[in-house]
Length: 88
Image 1 (tube, one colour):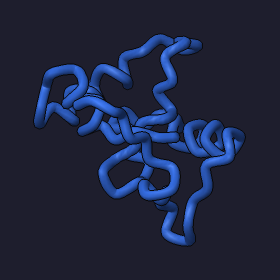
Image 2 (cartoon, one colour; image 1 turned 45 degrees about the horizontal axis):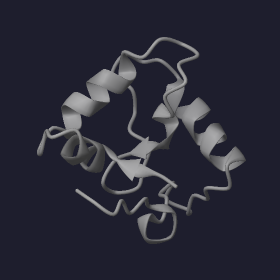
Image 3 (cartoon, rainbow, N blue to C red; image 1 turned 180 degrees about the vertical axis):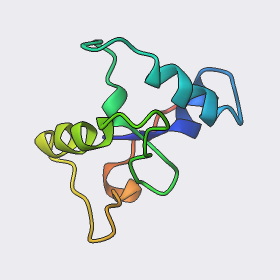
């Protein structure tokens, strides 16, 4: 399952704070136990990194290893793979 930056922001009590979630996740140290790779943008795509690091290739590989599939436009079906928490 994947979640969007917006979902994580709402759950953290920061509605409209998707960008802040992206910044926070990008600041995680290498090897963090937080499953950062499961957070994608609202279109179901991996967001490119602003600092030029190749994390998007790693993110795609990690998701594919977990059985998440991408379509021909590099999108993940949020209907199929999107996380639906019981509470917002």
